[in-house]
Amino acid sequence: MSITDILSADDIAAALQECQDPDTFEPQKFFQTSGLSKMSASQLKDIFQFIDNDQSGYLDEDELKYFLQRFQSDARELTESETKSLMDAADNDGDGKIGADEFLGRWHTCKTLSHLH
Image (cartoon, rainbow, N blue to C red; front, side):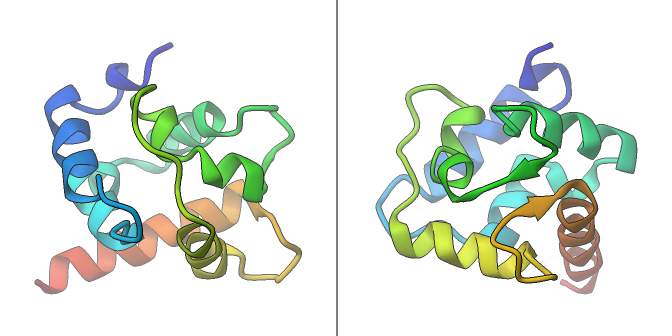
């Protein structure tokens, strides 16, 4: 499976373009531009598994650092502050990792917010 089986390559490229410079990654904006905020729960679970490089069922800081590269291999790494921001935004139980339910919860937040604009 490729991520472009679920998301449009053009949407991914546009989302990556918006955050190509260090410290410009904004999770909510990325989710909206890439099309993640329009995905069904089932599609988001597929995306989560794609991002979960070690298939542990959780995203840790090392996996989040390479978050953008899971969408396009030559994308940049997230900075330390961006990685922490993404972790803080979705790690609801404070265990230092993002489970599938927390990832889906983050998506619901973005989807809800996207309807308000």
